[in-house]
Image (cartoon, rainbow, N blue to C red; front, side):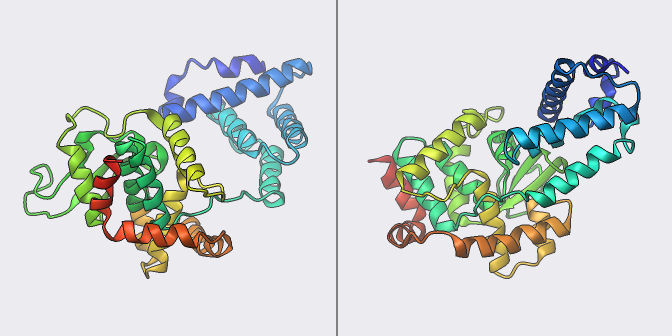
Length: 313
C-alpha cells in the first residue's frame, strides 16, 4: 500500500457526504501524516502497518505539543478513513490511542458568555462602526449558532412573520441553516424581540442573494477578540462562547434538555446535557465584571436605543 496514493483518490463520491471545509481539513491532515511517513522512510504494506504508523504519529504529535495536537490527530484518523474506507474498523490501535488521549488530556471548553456581556460586546462593535457584526453577535447568542452557520447567512435565509414561504398565518421569525454540522436544511426561530427588530433593519437594506454579515469567519473572530480586549474581558472568550452561553442560559431558565438540543441542533442528548451542565459550573468559576455588567444591564434593557446611540458615537 503506497501512502501517496491515498491523497489522490479518483472516487470523488467518497467525499460527497462531507462538508467541503471538512474535506480540506482532512486532506491537509493526511498530507502532513504522509510527509512524516516519507521523512521516516515508512511504507505500509497492510492496514496493520498503517495502524502502527498512525499510532506512532499520534505519539509524535503528543510529544511535540506537550499533550496538544489531538485535533490534528483526530482529523488525520478520519481523513484516512474517508480516503480509505476499507480501513474503517481495522485501525484499532490508533483509534484506541485517540480515545486514551482524550481521557488523558480532556478538551477545555470555551467559556460561555452571559446575555449581558454579549450585549456589551455587541455595543462595542457598533461603536466601532461594525453594525452588522454587532447584530450577528446578538443573533449568534439568541439562536445558538455556530460561527460558520452565522457568517454564511444570506438575506433569503431569514423569514419574518407573515412570510408567504412559510405561510402567512405564522407569526415567528425563522432562520434557515443550509449547512449545519449535524446536517443540511435545518432552522431555528429568533426569540428575542429586540434581536428581531435589529435584524429587520438589516433585512430591509440587504438584497436576497447577499450575505447578512459579510467579511467571513476570520475577520469576525478578529473583531470579536478586539471587542473583548477593549472591554477588559480576559477569560478567553471566542465566538463559540455565544452558542455555549445561549444554551447555558436556556438551561438555567428551565428549558428541557430535549428542547435545547433541538434548538441548538445537537445530534446527541448526552453531549448537549454535558454542554449545558458544564456551562453553569464554568460561569461560576469566571472572573466578576461587576462594573461592566451593571452598565451593560442598563443597555440590555434598552437595547434598540443603545444601538441607535452607539452608531452616533
